[in-house]
Image 1: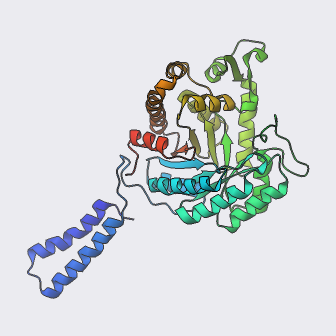
Image 2: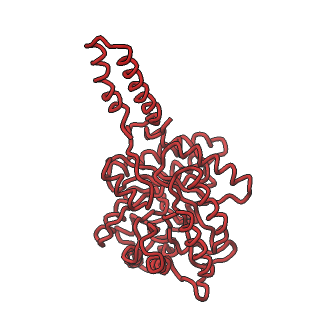
Amino acid sequence: MAAYPELMKALEPLVKYACDNELTDDQTAQLVQAATSIGKVVKSVPAVCDKRGQLPVIKQGKICDMIKEWCARTSEPFVSFEYFPPKTEDGVKKLHKCIAEMAKQQPLFMDFTWGAGGATSELTLQLSIKSQELHKVMVNMHLTCTNQEKEKCDFGLQGARGAGICNIVALRGDPPKGQARWEATEGGFSCALDLVKYMSANYGNYFSIQVAGYPEGHPDRIKPVTDLGRDMTASEKMRVVDVDGVLHVCSDADFEVELTYLKEKIDAGGNVIITQLFYDFDVFETFVSQCRARGIAVPILPGIMPLNGYGGFKRMTGFCKTRIPPAMAAVIEALSGDDQKQEFIVWGVEYIAKLCEKLVASKLVPGLHFYSLNQSERTYMILDRLGYLRK
């Protein structure tokens, strides 16, 4: 769709002709009709209230193709949002209202997570199908493959393809609630790589396959520093994580295993990498550099998790074993009181906005992927602070 200035430029010859010539009634009517037609198009162009200006309208389809077209047409970042299946019917209705609102931001795509062991498989598929149809935004459906029968994966893949959903996030998945570790089901898959290979072999190139990346190492490989039996290297110190007062780290050797595995997922058919949440730009920058050095050339999207509250932040970062830079940790603890909730939110928005600014300025990422937690408020505050909110 043409930008507003281009439409007005198209009107200029008509205005000039009207000023330079004495028009007949018929010519006047034609001029009015032409101006009205252009005016209608102008009104149909969404108001642009962010500093990125007029953004390209991308042909909807596979995420890998959409990113390629986006990057060919603009250097500005796109946004995308992630949601999880609510537990109640009322929650689903509220989520659709939230998505309808957030769709106004013209996200490149939106994600729906898949519960551990396929616990939300039917709801995830239903949400994905209805949302792509209702909200006119391409869906990127998560699919985990362990602790469940292979047939459940086929249920998701076949259902997605049948509904025109062509984007899947291939994941191993977390263990079901109450279970310490994930398990491979007999005749099923044991890791995300198995799922990527299966999709490539059985569904060709129908799907854009997204895979997970872990800038600090997978949580399963982030272990107590004391397990190293030696001093940490400089790279390990950069990734070190404080888990309830105990220092943990993904060793250099284990991180090499992680990178090798990530390369295998890409070589098997992975098209795009979406990272685990992180709060240290330097760690992400190093991760991208190491990926590129390995020959991993696909787009890498940063997973952005807004700070909603002290308790939720501690739970999420503890579960994911996320590194919190010392300076950030000091402020977080200083704003942990119940009477400081608003200050925590304001500071959190500013911190995430600055992180996003660094990511965009680095030119390492084509867009920003927000873990919205099924609400628009905090993500909108960050977008507004960045100057990206479309009002």
